[in-house]
Image (cartoon, rainbow, N blue to C red; front, side, top):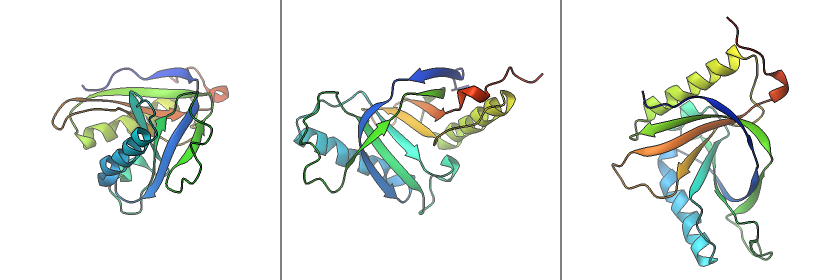
Amino acid sequence: MPFGEIGLHKSEGGQTVALSYKGSFVLIKQKKEEIVLWLREKNLLLPSHWVVVFFHDPKNRWADWARLEICFPLPEDYPPDLWEGEMRFYNRIFPPEFVLSLPYVGYEDWEEVLRGYDLMENWMEEHGCWRSGYFREVYPLDVEEGEEISIILQVPIELETLETPKS
């Protein structure tokens, strides 16, 4: 099975450069490259990963109406004038929060990846907790076509509601 163990951890949060768009998940690589070019133009060091936030059910990723946000972590010391005159990208801040994570390692078999969301939803139901934000996926920056990918499916949760699993 390509999934690792579901885990719960505290995310430190942080600043990101973000691009929001409405459309199919198919456009995601093109949109990612727009941000990579912008970061290079600004002479900012490229991070090791990037994040896709789903403002809808991630299982509907191919719908033309899908609302997505692509985020790249920014260094803490990014230039204060970074956003001057910028119309395409914006600063998105992820707060410190508790995050449920599920690693996936495999090929771009999206039907298999989507099963991970069912696993996470079942885990939350068993533990009596619910999400406090949107589902997201964390990707490594550079993956060649046809290579295995390592994705981390995540969702912020309300920790106060966490229960011992139902038997």
